[in-house]
Image (cartoon, rainbow, N blue to C red; front, side):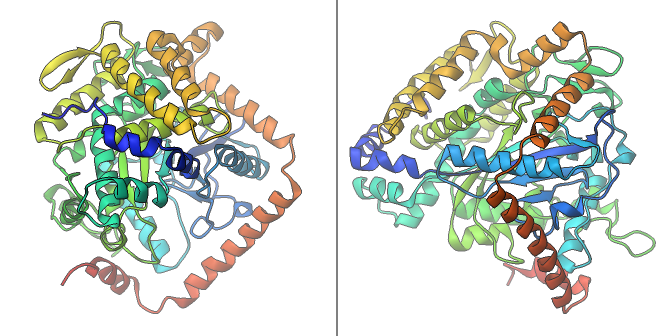
Length: 529
């Protein structure tokens, strides 16, 4: 039986060598932050188009939209410095805020009081790829509803330097090629992530409250009324990751193997070609011949699978993500289980980022057997407990069929995190990782330090609603960004990117040489014989 608390001591010894530990300074990171645009004074969801001054949402590399026209997504370039990562994210927030007229960015994951029929789907222009992106969102709307799709999050992209993998590979007895070794290592990381990521949700969950408009007709029994506008989970951490959000039951029948890259790709492609009666009943097109969804399969495309972590490879124009992975292997890992922190102007702080780095290296180095279907069910039950009552004193989780206290599990993980953090800090001038681990451990000792607890505490202290507290935060951040100028060189670079993005969109639209039906058929033919 696997012992996912035990590290691969031989691997740790290799990576702890001075010539290797310094390679941790070359970790590459990127952040994708989602945020709804709302009116400055009332927090009403914006009904305006994505601002033209921010560039084309189709082609701008750093500023785009997600499901809704009002759901901005800010994407940092991949960088190797936490300071540069934070600076890049701040610059993007500042640039966007300065181009919003009477609007602010909502600072929380769960939306405020909005009406589902007021959520406009994102548009990307007239090109075939733009139409495909819009129709995909139409499909999401029909399959899951609009409200779930405007719940915002933070995606954390992470990769270790190839030189570090090469050193580990050389010092091991592995018979795999280096590329195979890297793929296997990342899949090992993902398996352990599924076992332990409840810890990230406990530490960083920041959505214990939701507006009435986010609720289904039958209110879940773990929620209680907070005021006339909202409900809350008294010991909850992240309603975003509950069945109200991205852990819903509609994809419960999907099982994707994390044993290895080949099985993962095979399973992912299988469900994108698997007919599904419920979605067939929606219809592919409406009475006017307009597409309702891209297809009637269990998943329209790979990205519809709401996994809390994904293996990623940079795709070429028009390339399917699963085939990019199959062709070129895993380039980086995308962590998708993070709430937006409303107490941080950019939604995440660099202490959290450093902790996530250590956590992911722990998942890479800990023992990791295959994930059985039973274990997946057990971990799903653990997740439900953490998101709905993670701060409840004495909470227990399931581990190999037995109950274990949440704090005992956390203690065992943190003991290994400290060991790893010391190795990672050995290669930097000033310790970054161990202080981050120690800072987060305080939340295990005192749950009132968690963001979820702090949100409820502040609402109580101010005697205000969730909506009013979040609007106050949003207004403060917007004021700060608008009163502090971006460096001229950065401002100029971002303005030029806006101009170029519109030129790039026009270029794409002018070079389409087939009708949309043919374009879509060709896209789905990829990887078939």
